[in-house]
Structure formats: structure tokens, C-alpha cells
Image 1 (spheres, rainbow, N blue to C red):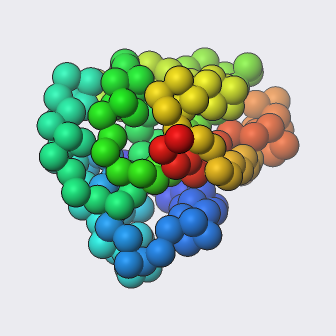
Image 2 (cartoon, rainbow, N blue to C red):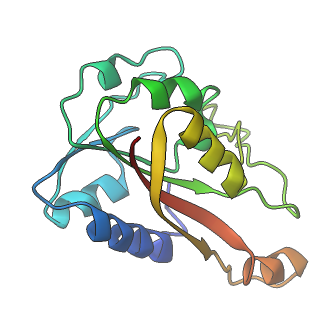
Length: 173
């Protein structure tokens, strides 16, 4: 997945945000299969379990049966058709979500070769906030950051100052 471009800045900022809000003594259910960032969390001292690749739109058993203090969903909600259902099924009292934000100058991402690597939603910050509010979550902290790329052109220039990522820490209301 990250053969050519490892997201060092995003991973660094995500880990800093996680460490700001979650103690290493708290257990984490990370939505999605094990990935480079779940390994980074483990290296930072967290106990992390991942879902096993099931289609979370159709099967929320891993959420219903989880016994974790925190649920993390880093770069996964944009792939789901119905994040409302997932947010309602979370049993933990703490939640960290990061999403790529919708960019007015770039269409929604869609891999032509990998059916799982497509964005059904590309949220604006207010849309994720509203979704969390409607599902009983209170936002405690949030942060945004840019994702500059080392290319020439109008879109790369716009990416240097347009926020691309949004991360939220929320607790059950």
C-alpha cells in the first residue's frame, strides 16, 4: 500500500494526537486489518487488536463483541457506505477517527484495481462532526493538517496550504 510514499507526517501527527488523549494502559480496537500504523501504535506501547477484514458495513460483530477501552478508525470511514451504523455499535467510551477531507479541487479517490481502496465518502469537517453528534459522541479535541506533495502544478500547490486530514477525539455523550 505504501510502496512509494510512506505517510510520515500523517503517522507522526496521528501518533502525537493519540498519545495526547490515550494512555498506553488502555486497550485499543483498531478498525481495519493490521496495517503500518497499528504496528506503530504497538511499538509505542499500546495494546492493539484489529478487525479481521470483514465488511463492517454488513457485519459489526467485532464491534459488538469487543472489550476495548478505545476504538480507533484511522482512514477507514471514507471507505464505508454506512458509518452511522458502525458508530452506533461501538461499545467503548473513547473514539479516535481520522479522515481525508473532501478537496474541492480533486475528485473522490477511486482505485481502478482494488475494490476495497475506494472512497465512498469524502467528508468536510462539519459532516463528520454532525455524524458523531447524531450517534451520541461528544467531540473533545480535533486537529487538521495539510499534505503537501513534491510535485509541480496547481493541485500540488493547493495541497501545500489546504487542510487534507482531520482527526477527532470523542467520548460517549
